[in-house]
Length: 608
Image 1 (tube, rainbow, N blue to C red):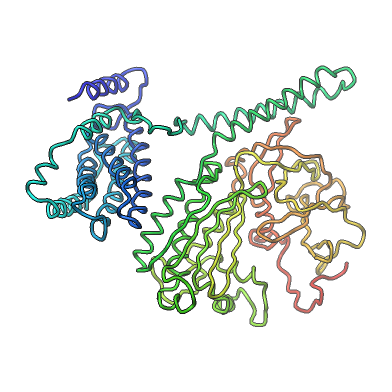
Image 2: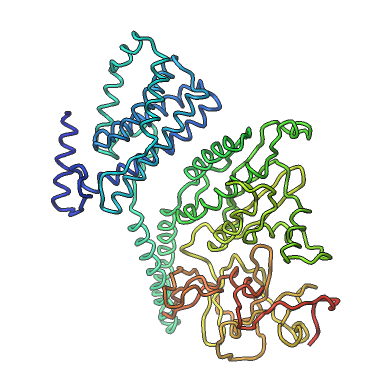
């Protein structure tokens, strides 16, 4: 055993018994929990990179750079697993490494069965690594193992044996000097491998520490606002103090931006996982698919990246399975390439991030959607909805036009979950489609879920923060601008449009200070607009969003709270939730904003 490995074991044992005080699962190797956690992180990074390289090699099997990088990933996992006595992981990675070594030696080509076996190896290794992580969480050991691992290793060994002559096998079993050096490097402690020449220097930051830093910066912003408010009393006598306050404000904002930037991560890792998903889905569907990614360097909050993964899985699967034509000859007849195209792209625009999934398939079947909606009572037979409203119907729970149900089929399967997840992040989903040309699902998301720019308003005696990005305009209603339907619901006439009028005092049952509508804020989400009536606009404020906690539960129309400059707590308005309230989706027996049948009303409103 090498000195490096012995030193690593000795250090790990001391760490388990000494200052760190971290426990390890019963029966686990003599390594502290931190070493095993580092292995899980390292292995997952290597496997994510391996999937990306595999996709490159599947398209171009002779890319030596991708092949060598893939070999190094499996070789590294093998070395680290051996260091930790994780036999199943080591054996699977070793078998894949042998197959890749044959490919490097031009004894076998990575096509057909060979490339499939490497993909399967990656999948099995992911399962094995996940089991190690689960054991760390549960405090149990050893990992259960994966049933198909042994059969996979045997299949690889047979393929390798058939590709090599006895002489070649003997030569291959003798490691080269370069391989000896690689093994020595891989035997070092996880996370201590040498960075590639010219690679960007990075460090891992514990997510809890990062969140704590962001919270502290948020408290600093709040404190600074309080001090600024206190010093405003002696305005004429505090010029120097105000000058220093301006400096403090500048530093505070820069620190806040820096802390926020630490949470920003590129979508590259997420996009690579989606590329692997697209490849596997295409295989299951028996379709030839060209999957493209654009904007992999686009950065957004790590929390948003985590939450957007599930919607992307649904959208990409549906695009391939249901969006693309099954018959390649049909595509060629329409002037398209025989291989279907699915594009995943990300970009910044207007202070938000857009993530779009677009296919060049058959497009949404408008007639089938309307027919299904009529059957379910979502539309009347004589109703002619707008294009946007038709496509939004596929996001209704359980809505699907698929004639054959499979594990993947039907755009309605999971689309309600997709939209709910997007809306929960303060985002929106737009669907564009053209018959015979394809469909695009565009997600508009906030860059971060931690801090928002908001408009501070008063309703009754309470303070609310309305996200600035949702605000379209401010209106001072005049006499005659407000109309009512059946003496129950109010509407505001704005530039020829009738918008539902939401009084925050009425909605949240607050004592009203003034019965007159002083100010209406027009807000928008997912293409829908409403007018929110408040008593007073107090100004703009950058709000650090805090969780409400379990006391109020899941309150429709409220997404969190924020500490204001005067030390009071203000509630952050959820515009999407307000729209749902207006549509009657959360009102229950409250009676507010109940849907009204306006069939006989020529303009959709009655004048009060």
